[in-house]
Length: 425
Image (cartoon, rainbow, N blue to C red; front, side, top):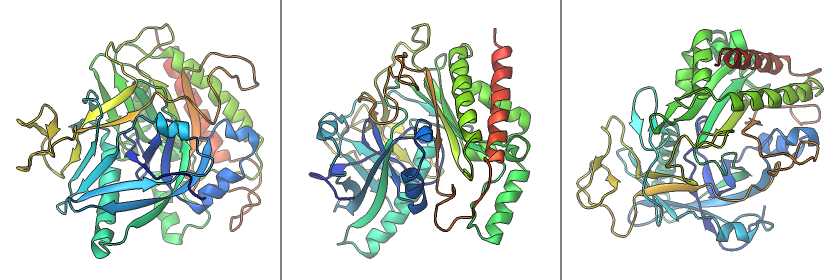
């Protein structure tokens, strides 16, 4: 799609909990995801009823990736012609620069961002940003760096889809990625891929429950930090382990978020009824993305007195096998354990400002039938459609009836959530 206006800089999306390709922020309400032809086609042919349960699709754009003489890699793209320029003016995003070092480390900085206050912890290490987002950006930048080295004078160009940012407005975004279904390969998968994916289903909770943890982050008010879990962790879980992980996701460290559980059960009931009536649709390798605000409660209480409208972090750096970043005597921010001093004039922080007005999808205050309702305390959407299909898509196998494997996963999830709610006092 043709761009409109001057190119805009992209920033890494720090709330990514799953997937393998890195996501970027165009503005507070829009994330950029690498282009997939089939996924684009699927979004373009969604029935109206299903759009309420998927991120709003906002077009696509070409992104130029360049490296300057200092070794910083910059991503800039021109949004579609109908992109609202007001969004750009109110983006609140610093211009990012990413440095890829040949030893494999990454440094991501944003100019003008606030000091870091977010702390993440996964099952092994503590970081100042979601460890999975770091991994995705590190792996991608290694590939980009190799390409730029071979053609240093030519920019690398990648195509991205523009999708609704489902964490917009959250002070402490809690995000859960659940792989749903008893089949995790597309119709066009090779025989070896089918065998590999089927074995993974058989040895994980995908086989027993039609569910598998693809990643999560949940804010713990009692600790003042996030707990993160990766898809690798999810593959190791037993049925009891998955139940325990889900219980942890719906807890703020002080109590179970029963308001979130009740709201999610209502949404899942609506989604299940909708999917039961969709003939020929198959959501192979798709996920459910559950989001809620860990910085606010239904009763109006704010368990985290330091909640902000943007989740700022310290320097987004990762060196394989390296210890946690040390404090640099030249600045109050974090720096790499490298003898090189920080670049002057740069605040070593990364921010994805979440203060933008929600655009696309369902607006706050509008009910599913158009009636006035308060903003929901939890949201759930279907995501990742690179291997999804339905009657009418070219090159796909025509299936009949609803996706029973996906529905089985929804039923399992509903049962687990009810168990958690019933045992909550």
